[in-house]
Amino acid sequence: MTRLFTALASLLCLGLAAFGLNAASPLALFDAIGPRDPGGRLAAKDQPFGEGSRRRLDVYVPAAAAENAPVLVFFYGGSWQSGSKDDYAFVGHALAAQGFVTVLPDYRLYPETAFPGFLEDGAAALAWVRDNIAAYGGDPRRIVLAGHSAGAYNAVMLGLDPRYVIAAGVDPKAIKAVAGLSGPYDFLPLDQDTTIKVFGQAPDAAATQPGSFVGPLSPPAFLATGDADTVVKPRHTVSLAARLRAEHVPVQQRIYPGLDHKDTLLALSVTFRSKAPELAEMAAFLMRQSASRSQYTMRR
View 1 (cartoon, helix red, strand yellow):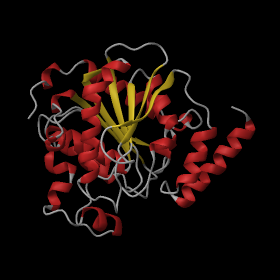
View 2 (cartoon, rainbow, N blue to C red):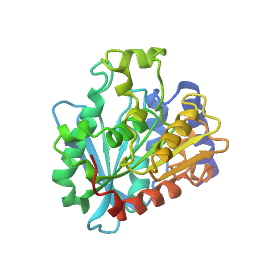
View 3 (cartoon, rainbow, N blue to C red):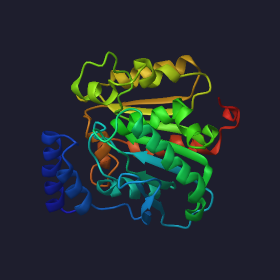
């Protein structure tokens, strides 16, 4: 990477820090000009999994032909109010290069929808995976879910609370593991503007919290954050990991020194991968769990 690109990427990240990941333009520019992992490629664009422009997904595959490969569905963040899969191609390439057939779905955002609409959209994307992913070399029986920030919440909730995937016609046993990067998992009472708007209409507040659904048959989880994250504090990761461990569920918890909220996303990129071994550790955990879960074949 040239010095010029390094300097420009650093300026962009300052913009991300200043405006937050809700500001689409800096992240879109970073995604557009940054180097991509050569081991992954875009195989399908804007595939519909439901009605409307927000129910579209992209598929990235390993550059080498895959057959019965594990499938990783990645949900981006944005406080359930912003975001676009088109700004996360660097993530799709990175995860595909690790050996996963990778799916990046869009989903409806507030105010178009509130809880649980975005979870229903995520489950609908999984139904598309079940029906179509074999054509891209993926195994629909070996799905792992991952996400960053609000997307981490989506991924973890879909793994822990099977109601949404069952309603979409997907067997929850297909979800072999989940990974959450800097996710909010424990935010009661609803006392922030975002959570009040997005979750305040839920008839049962406890049913919005991932920890409410932890049990001995919950999927293994890779939970990571940075110790400098002041947007979603590390206590969310620590709390959920402790709940899972109490039920003897396999958990890998990582708190990376010096990383803040945006860093756990940017560390997936070629440009900032040296910030932490996050990509390698997450990929190894998910690959291992997707390959061997015979002891967890009986789910809810």
